[in-house]
Structures are given as structure tokens and as C-alpha cells.
Length: 209
Image (cartoon, rainbow, N blue to C red):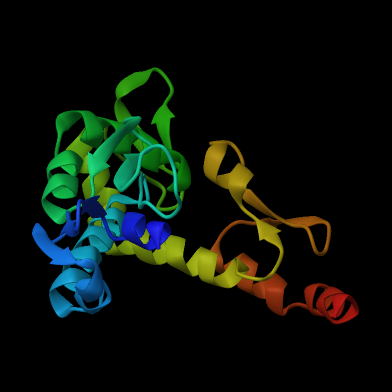
């Protein structure tokens, strides 16, 4: 039961239970009904959506730990109250925005430009843009081309034993590693799809099965 309380920001105060998500008080006999209520689940989903949009830099309380029912911000190394208002407020702070702007770059194949502090380069889209927080977020979160290209790559390599970590983190690397076939493949949707559908990859998949 204690784990359930932590996962839902429920604090025991004497005979009463305080829900930090809904800012309401309930009792033990009513707690399961409260946790199943639309109001509580809406608040919890609001927090989850904020965290998902932020890129997974915040971690929901899942297990019994010394931080209790707090959201752990990995980027800022601090705990945030587990409710939509507190999470939204933290995400919008200058410190978190700076930390997120740095954190999203490796996972989106975005690199600094040699001899320039003012520009960044996106390997996936093959474009340069200014090194400003707002511009980074616009490209990563709102550019439909970037979002589609990255999602297409992840969709293709899912369950195919193909690794793109070096491609994402090394500005000079332009290939993905197919561990299944033991070869490198140019890391773009056309070549990845061609390799995955090719005889060698299909044969190694059959042998593995």
C-alpha cells in the first residue's frame, strides 16, 4: 500500500490521507475510490504528458525511496513536487530550459559547429541553426521534418538489433551498426529499409529464429 501512496502522492496525516495531486483530503476507506476517480487520473495524466513532452528528463516516483512522492529532475539534480502546477513551473525555469537544451542534443544528433559558438548542426536534417534555447526547442519539438525523420529511423530499427548510438553521438559517424549481420549501414531511412528487407538480414533473422 505504501508504494501505491508514493506513486499517487498520497500522504498519511493521522487518520486522514492527503492527496498532493488533487490537493484534497480523503480517508483510508475511500482511497481506492479516489485513486480511480476521473479527477485524480486527470491530474496524474497531466503530469505524465508534461514529462513526456519535456523529453523524459523528469522521473515519476515509482518505488519506495528517500525522496518519497517527489518527481526527480535528472537534468537539474533536484526534486519537484508531484503535481501538474509544480512540474509545469519547474519545466519553465531558465535553469531547466538550459539543461534540457543541452540534454536533448545527443539524442537528436545535434552538434556544435567547429570554431563557432553561435551555430548548431542537425545531422539528421542536414541543417544549421542558431545556438539559442528557443531555436533548439523549435527544431526538436516542432519541426515536422526532424520529428518524422527520427521517428522513421527508430521505427525501422525496432527489434532489428541495429544500433545508432554512435551515429547520434559522433558528428563524423554516418552509419548505423547492424549487430545481427555484423556490418555497418548508412544511417538513413532508405538504406536502413533496404538492408532490413535484404537477403542477408532476412537470412540472419531466420537463422536466429
